Length: 137
Image 1 (tube, rainbow, N blue to C red):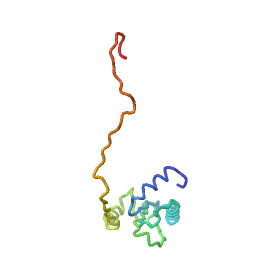
Image 2 (spheres, rainbow, N blue to C red):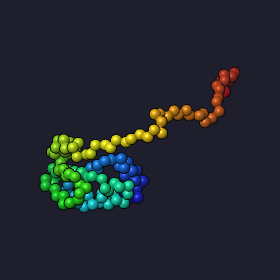
Image 3 (cartoon, rainbow, N blue to C red):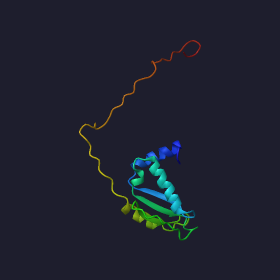
Image 4 (cartoon, rainbow, N blue to C red):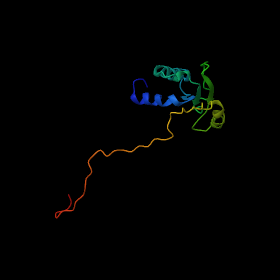
């Protein structure tokens, strides 16, 4: 992902996330994939690499017992599931909402307007349509 403008935009989008969920292909070495993702988050900055993380090992229909040997306090849960067969998805869905922390309320300061009114100014001079003997002008 490094160096790509779209990758940078994607990581910028993650700055609002309270918890990151990594869906990793379990048919390939999961530890290596997680380390790559973690390095990209650290390289981007903005504290993304410090967020709580949930790892989803997908494709357990191809690799029934995928290993994930990362011991890291940021990894708060590891799920093994198959999107193709649906195995493990119900458990993931049920537990997901208990793992993601609630949003932190933002206090509004008194200086913030309730709403803004935008009145765009015309960019070109006004024009008129005139009927002539030969058509319109």
